[in-house]
Length: 313
DNA sequence: AGGATTTGACCCGA
DNA sequence: TCGGGTCAAATCCT
Image (spheres, rainbow, N blue to C red):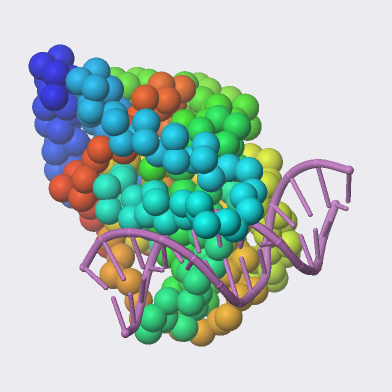
C-alpha cells in the first residue's frame, strides 16, 4: 500500500479502536452508542476507501478490470451457443469485498435486479441473487445475495459483494473521509438523513421495530420490482452484521424471498453492525468508488460487536 | 413494448 | 461428483 494511504489507514485504525473503547463505555446510552456506531462505520468506511485508493494507485485493480470486462460480455442476452462463456467469472465472492448482515428491511436505496435464485443445501430457504441495475450501463459490480433467516421469518441474511460504482442519482452522496467530519455530515447532507436520530430519519431500531408482517407484505410488491426510490427510512437492519470493510450500497428486493419457499434454514452465524443501512442510504456511496478494486479480503473483516450493546435500541 | 422476474440449464471450484 | 453461482429464454408486469 502506498505510504500516504498506509498512514491514513493507520490513523483511522487508531480512531476506530478509540471509538470502540468509547462504545464500551457508553453502551448504557443508546443515543451515545448510536453515535459511536456511526463513527465506527464511518471510520471503517474511510479505511476501506483509503485501501481501495491505495490499491488503485498501485495498479492492483486488475480484478476490477476483469470484472468489468466480464460484465460487458455477459450483458445482452446471448444465444446459448457452443461459445457460451457462462461461469467464466465465477467465484468472485472469494475475492471480492463482502459485507454480510441480517436485516428485516431489505430496502437499502439501491436498485437491484434479480438474476437468479437457488435452493441451497441444508437450507430451507432459497438464496436469491441480485446484481446492481447499473451493472451494464455503469459497470457497477455490486451484487447482493439474500437468504431468509430460519429463526426469524422476517429477517434476511444479506450478503453484499463488491461495492456500488454506479452513480445512481437517487443514492449518490459525497463521502467525507476524515472521521471528524462524519458526525456533522450525518446531518448535513440532504441524503444523509438516514442516520439522523430524529424524525423521519429512522434509525435501525425504529425501522425494524416498526415492521409488522403486514407492512412487510405490503413492501413485497414494491421490493419485488427491484427498483425503488430511495427512502429515508433506510434499512431496518439492526441485528447482526458481519461486516467487512467493504461497504456497499444496496437496495432492496430480496423480499422476493418472502414469497419464495418459507422455512427456517440453518442459521448463519451472524456478526453484526448496526449501521449497515448507512450504506444503503447512499451515505457512503462515494463517487470515488469508481476505482474500488474489490481487493479486500476476509482479513479485513471487522466485527462491530454491537449486537449486544445496542441491539436494544 | 420494454424492462424485470422466473427458472432450468450450464459451468466451475471444492 | 456435488453444490453454488450465473446465464438466458420464457414469462410476467407495467
